[in-house]
Amino acid sequence: MTKAKLMAILNTTPDSYYDISRAATAEKAIGLALKLEKEGADILDIGGESTRPGATPVSEEEELKRVIPVIKELKGLLSIPISIDTRRPSVAEAAISAGATMLNDVTGFSHPDMIRLARDTNYDICVMHMHGTPETMQKDVPKYLGGIVPYLMKWFEEKIKKLIAEGVQQEKIILDPGIGFGKTVADNLEIIHNLHLFKKLGFRILFGASRKSFLSRILNQQTAELLAPTLAVNTLALNQSVDILRVHDVKEHRAVIDFMNVYHTNVD
Image 1 (tube, rainbow, N blue to C red):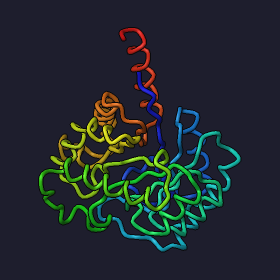
Image 2: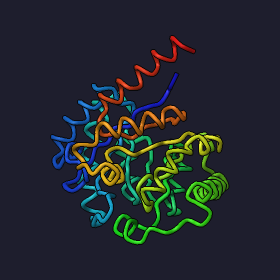
Image 3: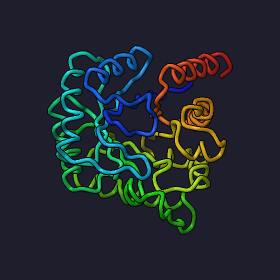
């Protein structure tokens, strides 16, 4: 039986890599958020800056303009928690004031002010590994000495130690190995094969592989064609007891989780 939660992706951007998740206006974002909740999302993850490979950074002012009005409006409309997907402490702080209750930082809480927010709010935080920046992460992918999995295990251990030393509560930390963020196709497959090892660290694991480009490279398919392989790879993740799936396609993943729960109830 899986108790995995679905984190729905909502990008208030014009350039995120999957157009169905984009909502360039507040009105569209609110409508999409309500639809995702109805389809079975447990968490809504809102971002105002694309972090796809090669993405150009946006200004702080633009990011705030994209996400804060949407969060304020949704706070009174949704019954599920709102996560803010940002690498800027100022945006995270404004989002919390607007109603967000979870922090998702692709830079792994590398900024001291992000750590301070995590400590002071005592909200759940998603700590993701990324090599470099979205602009550079796939241009010069490193060869991880000893392999990607041992590297990430050590990186997580050091990151956890630092966060706890700074006052972040252990039970609030969620780990994300960062599929596609400065990794080769082989690295990503190695991570997927070893998700159970990350679980042994004793923390919740968030897994985000939805419609990502490594699937395109493997299958020679466009982003719009990647629902089936996304469902397949996320089922592999569920079988290793990941705790949160970050997805574009909520309805389909809800059906997968519901089926797995019925299956395990009847055969376990």
